[in-house]
Length: 264
Ligand SMILES: [Zn+2]
Image (cartoon, rainbow, N blue to C red):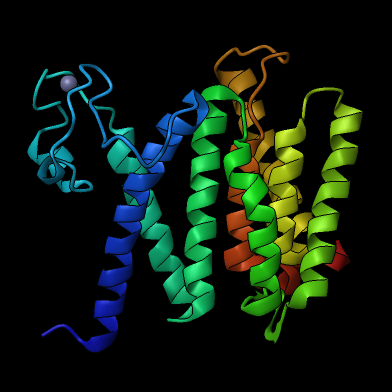
């Protein structure tokens, strides 16, 4: 017997794996200017269409032992990894926010952040196809269904959502201006979208978390991997990680800071 609540987790993990599979399609096709709807998935090496029963998230990869059925070329382990990551984050979202409409919206937000992360990592672009629709959708969600992530008892409302979007836009517009090309329009649009969902506090916490993470990894790469300081790392993946941290633990981080951090 599986208790009733557990079915919800199993269901959201499965939805997460399937959405993760679609995220893989977006990650591959969006930066190459291809439609994400048609045609059906193909092997990147031999272009053979993948049969639906060979396209089951994670399971097919394991059953085919990570190789294309037609040409035998290895399939990147990143495909099942992205699916698992998406499934895991959906499960955490359900745990944090319960079976609510806002959780369904956060599913969308999480997958958008994953797609942005891998496209920015591969191509140093943050796709407009995600961020431009994401801004009005985020504001609409903020207005109608989202709680304020920092005051979970309160709804965010349209004003808070707009202020969040404006904060993300203004802060990253200023950063892009000062960094002279280090940070671009993609980051501005991404943080406008994130601000609509997370509010202005979320923008600040996301930026702070992303900078910490980015510096830590930058220092690691310079010291241990011998990368020069001029070597550029895309910032989108760090912003995505910061946004997820703000979404899941923003409230805790801020109350922790208010209790202990101020005495430093
Ligand atoms: Zn193949």
